Image (cartoon, rainbow, N blue to C red; front, side, top):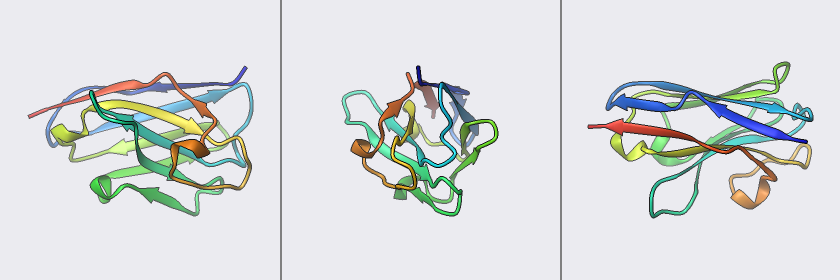
Length: 125
């Protein structure tokens, strides 16, 4: 049974930092893209960042470029999201996702087959 478990969310003041982690179990994702999405209350789930299987390519949504960094450790089957200079508009539930198809890479939710349960990030002003 494949599981993605996020951790690291919490409450932080504007300008602060958080590091999210997502540990995968049940299968290896070393040949698969992994990503982070978020969903704010009353809004649709949106793409935040994704990283290719070999870490050579990373995509970011425009609103987080220069502030967030996605990384992965294939030996640990884990993906990370370092979030700096947080803003109140970053407040959302953050979800980790993994693609089932090897060597594919995308930003759309439909690309990703496995999802975590989400971790709340709240940024106060």
